[in-house]
Amino acid sequence: MGFVQVAITLIIIMLLVKPVGGYLVKVFQQEKTGLDRVFGPVERLIYRLIGVRENEAMGWKAYLGAVLLSNFVMMLMLYLVLRLQGHLPLNPDGVGNMGAAQAFNTAASFITNTNWQSYSGENGLSYLSQLLAITFPMFTSAATGFAVAIAFIRGLVGRQDNLGNFYVDLVRGITRIFLPLSFIVALFLVFQGIPQTFQGAVDVTTLEGAKQTITRGLVASLESIKHIGTNGGGWFGTNAAHPFENPTPITNVVHIVCMMLLPTALVYAFGLMVKNKKQGWAVFAAMGLIFLVMLSIVFVSEYKGVTALDAAGLHGNMEGKEVRFGAAQSALFTAVTTAATTGSVNNMHESLTPMGGFVPLAEMMLNNVFGGKGVGLLNGLLYLILSVFICGLMVGRTPEFLGKKIEGKEVKLAAIALLIHPFLILAPTALALATPAAVSSISNGGMHGLTEVLYAFASGAANNGSAFAGLNANTDFYNVGIGLVMLFGRYISMIAMLAIAGSLAMKRVVPVTTGTLRTNTPLFTGILIMIILVIGALTFFPSLALGPIAEHLAMPK
Image (cartoon, rainbow, N blue to C red; front, side, top):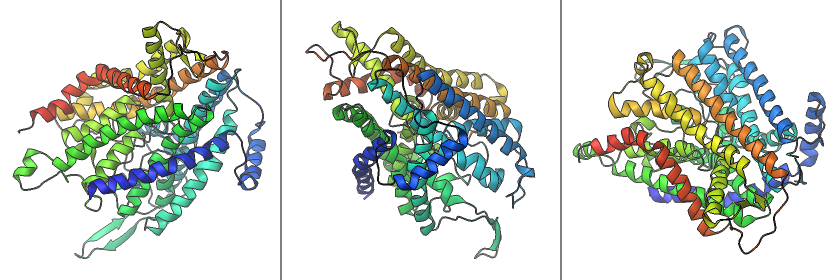
């Protein structure tokens, strides 16, 4: 039955890929969608208010400048709200101001679509902070990633340094994609029993006669954009394991579908926008096959369990999992939330078997398995550019992709974007393990403790936001360190990819000949997968061998 549940969920996702992908193309190519009368006047009003000319094009430098400037201003606003929340309205539970280091970490987390939390949502934030510093950037960060991905695609097929208008892409992404989808999903979640209220906590008497304080809030609206925008984070500390965030198996499936909906559809939309559906499906196949391998590992590992559980007469690993979801939906949620860089969790990843915990860690290290809104596609295309370059060298021809020559400048920029990711994971992990104050935050010794720290920085660098738990990350070292990792992990790759897009946009299209390397074939898909895995293995295998792999091998057989 567990296999059937997983299969049905994946089939639902696949059925939505083409229609949603086609809609995304219409939105960003400004084609008529049938809803222009609804969205058009609202968008024109927004453009007028912010002083944007709808038809004004931007080169890659102007586009990048708009991305960085808007995100910096919004991050500053988030920081101020968190630092002053104790003095601001909509604070029925009397939550105090957030500390400087934690406010920096949280602002960096939510502006970068990471949504890492070193606080417990129901106790650490006022309702105003949940709205302005959490839910609001869930829309803007998701739309920013989408806009950058669309700009890069325009560079691939363009004939001049014109990547569109960032502010127009941002607004259309929010008004025509994220807001409508979030509204529909939020209504369904309320129907399933998720709270949506401004009223504060309520004191109740349990069946045993004990007193209990139950926290409520605007949970449904946060949960909808949290998963549709692959944001992660949670109103409650236990995230999607909490019955107020994820009360039923149906809401669990809705959360999974929402996480995968736009990342998978965007890959298909990429094929449509470059007018080469086979190319889109080739990238989709590479990402999909890696995802299925990872899903199989965590699925089998959690169903098989470990020797100690078998000895106790318990078959399979249910530690840290909710009974209402079971091992199958927990394993699928684990694979999806790190493949789509969401970071939402419906089970505790630290309680997974060693090889089950290996999967979310490995997916974040590869940083390209579908990925979040737009950035995941960009990471996949980075590997594709590198694959084209390597294959071109092997056959003695100038590497080409979609008729554009891949030359030294593009390869250097792609290399920078690819190498910064492992550096941001491994260097801070080494620093943390060499710092006594940082080591004292680890709750488990040995191999498991190493994995806790490695997971935290991998989550920040991949803009995922999930936690391995067991690590006290609410210290100045981790708040500042992970905050910087999140910012560098997000924006360095964006800068490199927009620079590549600007370079490619200025190049003329080279005619296809019999000697042209075709990048839309099953053979190239296989090459792409192998290069992704080889680069990942060479970079991260030593650290993984000291963490989850060593823990698995050390377990009694």
